[in-house]
Image (cartoon, helix red, strand yellow):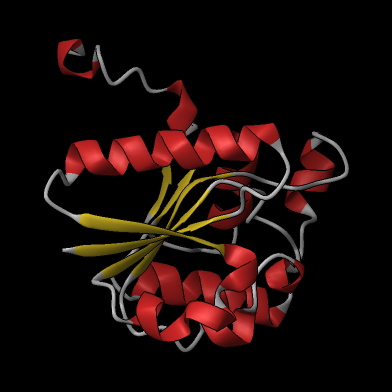
Length: 161
């Protein structure tokens, strides 16, 4: 199995932590997979390689935004043929109020991307309840509150009951 991990780790230390923790978790679940990390700001340059993966996993970064075309090239991502999933992604808002959370309005292209992810075999694993509520109010399926991959202690994961 080939997994293309699309990371938003450019300068933020937290994004590097999420990238590494997501990668470790993917390797734990799929030990025989070939996992290649690509930076999300270089998706266009590696389109063919990424599109030849069996699954595409976006990890970390604020990918729950009203307009994610400022974060990823939506036109390119909408052409991917493998199933996509978002892992450990979070909400980007001006504050943590419920008003802000429920008044969120995704651009049509952003919402189309989320629908492609959730309707074509993938899912969205979010790290916070703001993200969960924001996506669920759009009647999207396959939204999971998984928390942040950096929260997982892989040395103890088998002890969880």
